[in-house]
Image 1 (cartoon, rainbow, N blue to C red):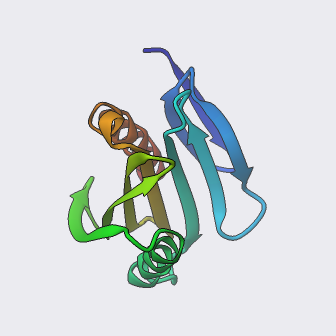
Image 2 (spheres, rainbow, N blue to C red):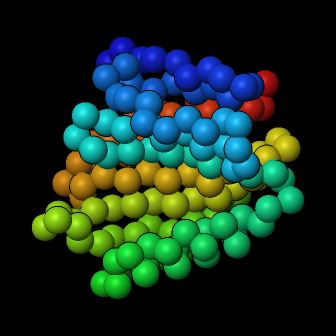
Image 3 (spheres, rainbow, N blue to C red):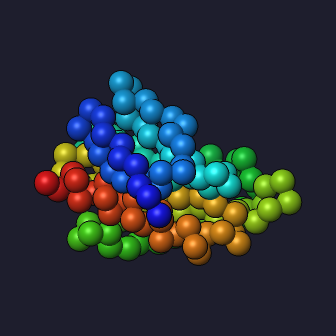
Length: 145
């Protein structure tokens, strides 16, 4: 799979060449980038100042998702991503007759708090999960350098 590089305002990461940049708000806080697959799956990153709480971020997102999708299933998660503790939720909900999986993670790296969202139809998530993780690793490794 060929890759493209996002490189703007000190933020850079790799993503699949056939995916599309659908949002790029680097002049606002939080800085936001959203990359979408041809099938509608997406990976997004919101970059907040380091002082922003990881727990408050994920609670805000989880609450908004619960308001949008009242039947949502939510599982709290704590995991390590490249040596940093990430907190978040794995979410499962129905949208337009599809079961959707969404993973929300917040972590602090360098001088920022990152909010990452990976979302895809449930049947595609396992395959795309590897792509989402590779994008995240390329983002966070570039921040460490």
